[in-house]
Picture 1 (cartoon, helix red, strand yellow):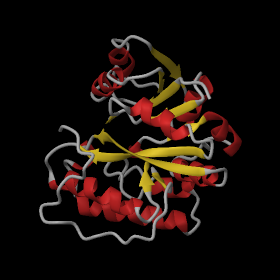
Picture 2 (cartoon, one colour):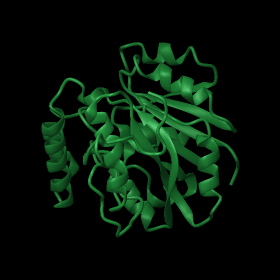
Picture 3 (spheres, helix red, strand yellow):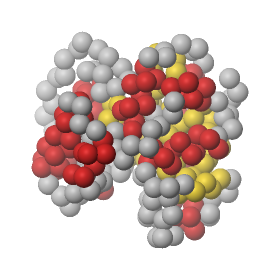
Picture 4 (cartoon, one colour):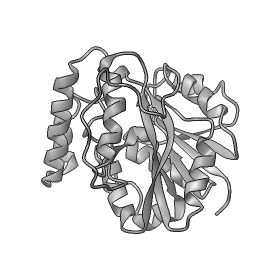
Amino acid sequence: MNSLVSVVIPTLNEAESIGPTLEAVARMRGAFEVILVDAGSPDGTARVAGRYPGVRFVTSGPGRGVQMHAGVAAARGEAVWFLHADTSPPEDGVEKVLEALADPKIVAGNFAVRFDGPRRAARFLTWFYPQLRRFGMIYGDSAIFVRKSSYLRAGGFRPFPMFEDLDLVRRLARLGRLAHVPSCVTTSSRRFHERSFTAAMARAAALQILYWLGIPPRVLYRFYPQIRGVVPGPSADAVSLTTSSTPAAPPPPGIPQPPCTLRS
């Protein structure tokens, strides 16, 4: 496997968040390329991203799965790392991806994740994500990476309007092992700042359960716009990468951040 990591960032109206993300990407060590796949943002996303040297621009139709698939098609690296436009990677991110994929049995993986900001909802999700991981559940916010050859063998992202990550990773799991990297990515908590966190979690969980029961993503998507971008709970970005029989512990007083905490 070559040592180049292709970082694929899908965007749609991300002018406000793409700058900080690309700044964090620029601080990473190692050999990598950045592929920004835009779905026709009218808000100046491309103009902001154009300030950062070396970013390759690809256009595609809307839909995160469609965009990320287009990014894989343009990728020159054997390792492909999917990064949300509002998620900042750690400086050692590229090194950790290559370290994980050095094991030929590993086909894909993800990172630990924290949500930024001092709000209790963000702190709760930062604590809650590791607990879910103990039951084999992680989410797309945690920067999934994949061996390109395994991605192609699995058939890539399907053009689902939601749950495309869950669908792909289930197929990848049939091809080999899936790794968890303890280094932490930091994702924005903007999605639930002005909404009811409890209600958003409940609605997102309901959609996830309906998907597990076999309701097609295209049907569920009719109910998705009202919660889209609210909270990354059991929703369209849910993926299953690791398993464990260890039960989740109750949140400690004050809901402290996990060991991978980065600066706010």
